[in-house]
Image (cartoon, rainbow, N blue to C red; front, top):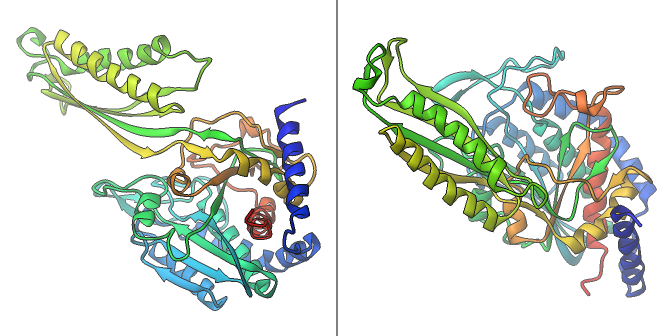
Length: 439
């Protein structure tokens, strides 16, 4: 029996047991479907409006205003400014019960859009002190619109709900902007997003290349922990024609890059856990015939095992110091975590599989997909509360997902046919969790 079938079977058995223990009466699936169809035109309109007006991390003032106004109009309790521009909405059902949280991220990227959409972004923002183009090249516009739609559907069912739903609209998922110590999830948690009321579970989603209408995730480690790595090499400036009279940090930088690549390929067992260590930027020199006295390198480390990650960081620091010394240079080495490992609670993952199938349809959910080396700071919510993060396939119709523009690409776009599915997965995961007995 496949892993996927075992998870679905165990979840089905668990569901039967819970029902036998006296679970709350379920809101019929047909009721949810009808409510989602009614709100769908709004969801599409919100998505296109937000797509046309993207904002960078911790600058999502317009987006936060749209969200807060909508939640207030639904009669929810609303807190703004949670984590600078974050918004928290609380829907209390007609009867007391459990508490569940749903999360969407709001920020865009410093990317020049090339989708050709009639509502494509022409916006700009400030990043690293420079004016840059800004676009929703990761699908967060769709995430916000889908959760706004779910809030409207669930608010319309308030009289049928026993319990509380917390809606978390998070800024700065793409990482803390330069000069900020914390990204959006960590800062929202620090400022009380998971308090008063405190959820017992949290769910979130992300649109990615994939067959439209499919949902996929895995229990335990799903998305990698992400670290930013910064290396500064210090040498001695000299004329390009007399390299022996200085210390060549450009040559040292080339050796450092090769060393990093070798460390990953030759000291990590690829059969145990995926690991990626990439040097992505090199900044050195101002003139073609001057060897500079400093070179700055930065990159990313993606891991799924904490002990292995710590050991690799220690080896890298030692090796880079030795490489620099071999060239007569010195090195400063710094590592900063951008996101922890997205770790899906195993029992909650098994329970969620048939709930997602209720939303997507039979055969459309894979709860045993391979891990992915991209990262998500939803992981910080999971450190505080059991949670599950899952992906929605959102590639264009007729396009092989392997050939579709990836997230963060100028051509990335979300197939709007998946918007109702995202609303439904949010609604069903919240409703069915609240309908579970505490035992």
